[in-house]
Image (cartoon, rainbow, N blue to C red; front, side):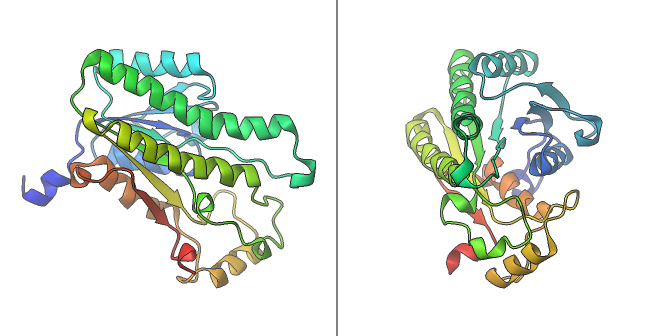
Length: 257
């Protein structure tokens, strides 16, 4: 194996992906499986159309601490290790903020922030229990954790971005920095991927939104879902052995304006 191949070699690593059946979750599960990893996908809803052949799936609600602990413990017991924890699960609510209910606000906070924390907490406790030597945590945030949405884009979309979504994604970014510092002496790296607008081929955004977003984006288009893969593979691999606490924003330059 040559130098470059060894840097990016992920063969036989055990990778846990939450939100595994969502748009990006499916893509991440597929890319790690194709890289030779043992992939375990966790999601609260699992259906046949969302599965990737060769990936093991567990049904769990990450906003439930006991659920998280039991499922990660079962993975650790079965595979004797978890090399990469990918906290990809995330939700949002789309009604106007004037009509935001407390239940919907708490739901987004519970999954995006509490759920991410519960997964990290459970992983760290297993890491210490089994005395693993090194690990990597990847968290999915959003460029809306860094900047506000441009609401001029949402002329034909009911899925208007919410204040609580952006707030939780900003929280994920800051939580990642916290744990990057705190876990460095355990040889656990913690990094973030923040996608910009990603085109959804299964449930396309409105034509006006796509055009409006393209005008707002320096690269003049939305991202393809496969364009998130490179950062994930890099951050999970030994090529990123000195990379921690970083937020890689993949947004075609939107946040450069």
